[in-house]
Image (cartoon, rainbow, N blue to C red; front, side, top):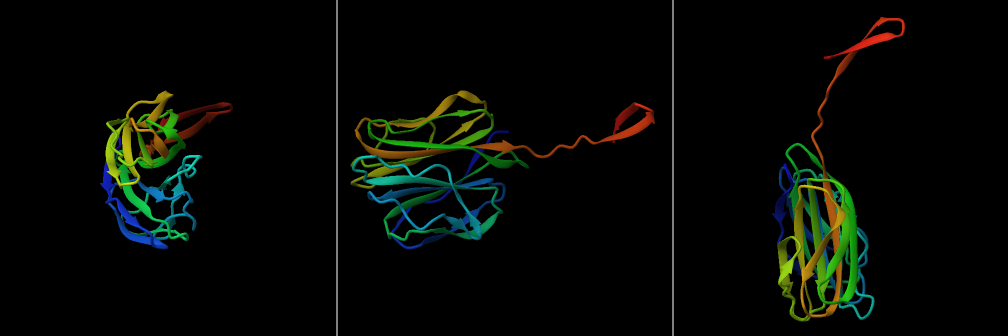
Length: 233
């Protein structure tokens, strides 16, 4: 059974330090992701995100254009969280304006999520892309987020399924996901079709599935010197 998308939080803006919000993980959700779009040329500071007592992991480095960036993109994740409601804390010691959103997904019933890869890139051009990553496993969940300095962010297409595309006025951003049912050894891109050239930074991550445990137990019985046999219990 392939991945399915889980709970999508509302994209929210804050300049608090820290930013805190209540986030509920539903029963069966096996990965919690947080997309951050940080406004300004300075990177967010203050450290890792937390959900309750759990610390999230950054999927890839913060991505922003090398020249005159208007903002940056970050992607964080937590594998196999316990169902329930906890406080998501986003450190923000520079008191920057941050647009954030939570995205959850669930793998096959009884399975667990595992991190496969994180990747990202940046530039000043049309058609932002997080780049391409080989996916060796089937039953994978891919997510990507992009910050764009475009004054009218309105992509006409994207690789996967839209989570959101939001024009914030002087800049904007989007997020998307893709569910893979077969390996993509040649590499899977996560990109947006957008004809206006502007600065951008994009990050993506892929998550695989650890299937439920299946035991085949055997009893070994010695029947003589140098000989043995096994029977399934």
